[in-house]
Length: 71
Image (cartoon, rainbow, N blue to C red; front, side, top):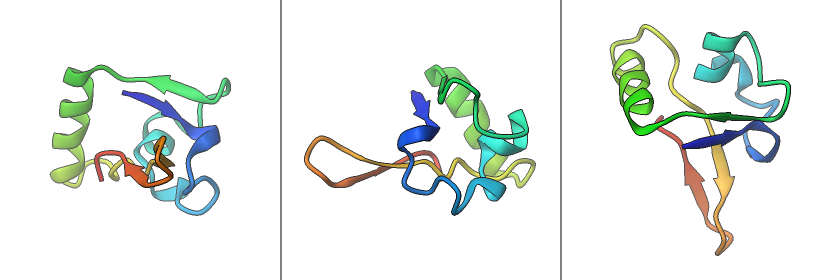
């Protein structure tokens, strides 16, 4: 999963309660973060147990619909 904070529709709206902010102290400097499937699953478990906030990523897909992260 590629997390591109620059294209996230929730940027500046839900950053304070996003997993990226909780784990990295803010959005990545270059605008994106690459997380593989195993890391994504592990982060999902942490979020479900309340140890970190869920990923708040919301980006439009190619058809203009919203695609969300793991939370």
